[in-house]
Length: 360
Image (cartoon, rainbow, N blue to C red; front, top):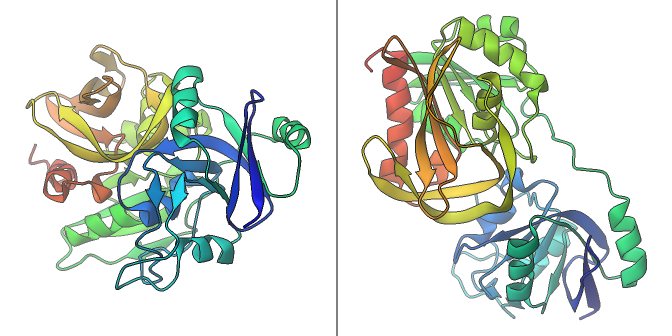
């Protein structure tokens, strides 16, 4: 096994062994505290442009399953402490190392992931470079020359039929999500017209939707260059459901602020609490930016307030917009379609369906 090096943009260097493909890669360093589910993490398109480090030391014991819903690995690089030498699972078709190598994903193992995690928690988010071909000084120089990651477009446009009798029609603005949320919506009997995030209000209106869904997707800060059409949607009084980066876009459209977290939320089971009911539950998180906390505020589109917060650091995890006492927009920063508690997460979709039907 060949040697590999890892360099942070502040100059700190770690030595380890190559894991996955050989070569060189760069990206934003994020750590994931999930104990299981590394394949879902690796194939999550929200990790595009990011180098993911697992805080759990032993990774890869269940190998790689090619029948997983998404076999394409999205991360730019992968960092583990102690990779399993061989897979041990009846569904495994190959090892994790082989899967990374087959898709050209450069990784490193044998590094002190605890020290790396502490570094991020102390100094905040940093970019990182991994190489099996270079010395530390040259790698650091190329790392500092790397441009910030660009956000990719989502789907070009298609229709997802409802999973049963159609009860409503929605337009989904796709920022590059994995598609699980759209699947959940169709399971509720909603016909979903998927459009790219750059769609205009005229494009949205052409489908005569009962509501609009703004998906999650890769990238760091949500750009305000796409909020014009969203403001038109709000002005037209169409109900809006937003998830992940979609929530950040909705926040910007409402005049709220977003900011970079000192260290992001990346985990399969982080607790959040719904403020109105006091009910808490586990949720899947993957975001490095968040909406800045605020008191309920009147906007030209209605009254906006915080609906959910993370229990461990009080980061805003949900928004509600009401007009004349009725809910007109609902947003969550976590992923309701990949929740550790699926029954609770379906409440988000069920509540939005009731909003489109004007039941709430």
